[in-house]
Length: 187
Image (cartoon, rainbow, N blue to C red; front, side, top):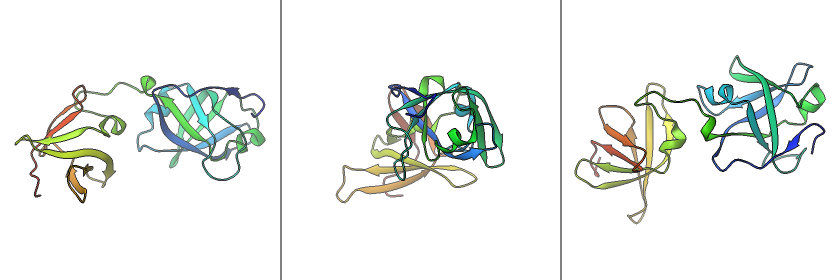
């Protein structure tokens, strides 16, 4: 473990939200690649959990806790400083580390807004009551987001893409783990 880093287990509701790209400056700041175009989760949480990079040299083992002093947008990334990291050398040792945040610390969303992570795994059903599959991932195409579904009830498995817009999505029921859509199986 790096000096100053506190060993920590990932919270049960931990979500991977970014990766440490490199050190930034000489005072221990790190530059982060957020996995979201709107990295509010990084800004709202003051406790980031780190796991070593899956590839490359590992400079620490197991999980570690970073207590964030400040995080802000910088060009196409986020820069942050933590209480535990006070110089460039220590910050460089975090290169490649995966950043997790407890889902419970994400900012609240407005009605009809959803975090992508909450949509993955939901069952998609059309107006005729037919199951179209489960949300495997979401794609950002610029003007809209697209639900990528996988229907494992067919052989071979069928992949469907449905624009995540009001014209096709009737409702999202997080509590029932369903998305109701105006979409036919043969589209």
